[in-house]
Image 1 (cartoon, rainbow, N blue to C red):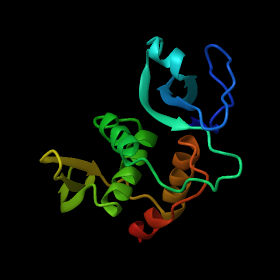
Image 2: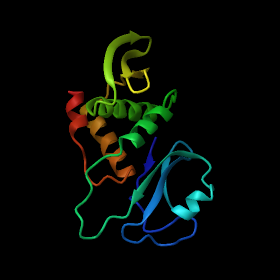
Image 3: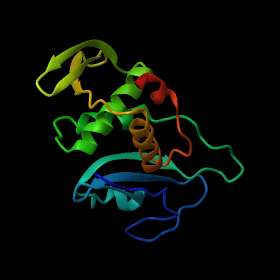
Image 4: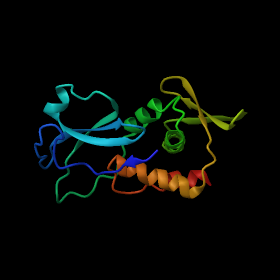
Length: 172
């Protein structure tokens, strides 16, 4: 799966209204022909509900020009993406789910419960204490370079201007 990587836009996709400093707007991922495409909407257009086919979304804000870049990550958005990728059999999306699982373990959203062997390979069993759930995630046996590549794509897709290398250290 390839992603159309683009940063947050300067305006709304529907009404073409430009975003101004500190304005809140919605960013959404759409699964279009096995590709994630990011689209941005002003609050007014988003609230009209013309957003069929949304895979995942989050509310964001145009930063002040003189303000340092935000370095916090919206864990709820990552968790939402992880949940929606469950059961997806497309290779790149399975790989993305695995990398998200690694990151969410690192951030203590999930706990590693066990490892088990199944037909098709190794599976990591995750505990999600907040909702008392468990998830099985296939280990696709990615090489370090593949994990790094998926991580970079993920951060660019979500418009995070930096690479959090914590994910990479988990894979070793």
